[in-house]
Length: 197
Length: 197
DNA sequence: GAATATTATTGCACCCAGTGCAATTTTTCA
DNA sequence: TGAAAAATTGCACTGGGTGCAATAATATTC
Image (tube, rainbow over all chains, first blue to last red; front, side):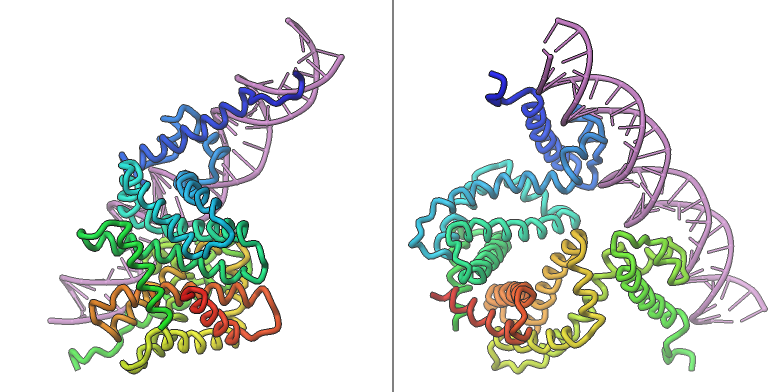
């Protein structure tokens, strides 16, 4: 029993603190806004020192990024189940449909989404998130279809899909009749039409 | 001669200082890197006080954004000349072809492009620039084709085009045989194929 | 289980971007 | 020329982020 690697207090605590920081961070952002929340406040509420915060995250923004990564990861997880014969773009579209359903049905996620629209700084963070998502999406696509000659096509698909997701959200917010999923399908369909012609 | 509005010392000086700051800023970024350049250094070399810098730019990043805006503006200027009967996407593609030629032939622009790849921070700024360009591109498109029912199509075209431009640059850097213009055309063509099928 | 090696946490001093404010200088205009 | 308007500046302050060295917590070895 000298090697078997059970978890160990150290690792457990670290994971816990990491999660606490994300929780507490979002909590405070929702309470006081992003700008209005200092790292001192976050560290305080999480019960660590300000200095220690930086051994968990490189920056304040990293809290948002980390949270988003976990959310998006579940979508990518679905995508990995795609059979080889599928069309990449169809597969992505389908995964996104599920993704936005989850999104829509979680009050917490909707609240954070709201928050992200509230300040200029946060809108900018959001833009970064799209890039990161695109990159992660491409990474998964090229796991599934690793042929080098498809590389640029897959990058294009990732670019287009994330872009379409972004437009979908904008378009959905600009109206009230249609469901998020409907808007997604319409957006994908119309854009493909438009680009072909 | 009491009203005729010649330029006035005030306005001229302001414009001059503004330009000087962009020049000096980029100069220093190229010399010492973005991170390595402090606002003190920029203000110093431009012959103003640090505090005054902020009456010209909201932030350090703003220098980069302002420079980029002027460069991109010339491309948009070309676009505005597009006849109404043209296909928007074709028009944009053509304008981008000219745009990247200019880019390619200016040593200064190439140097800045290089710079932007050099640090993590600057890569992030670059990402923001793409969003801003997309927004500006859409604005011009909807000047030309203001019909509200085309709104989402035009947004899609802006999104797709800027995305394709981004991929073009990546793809071009990853090889040596083809010219930038060729890669642009190939990328546009292949992506449209891929998305339609 | 005590001694020792690792690794995490912390405090402290520091750098830099950015802001508010009030004093001063420069430009405008009557 | 003199008063009004606008630009520049200094100063003090906030908050994010880093380097470093001391200390505390956990892991490892005998």
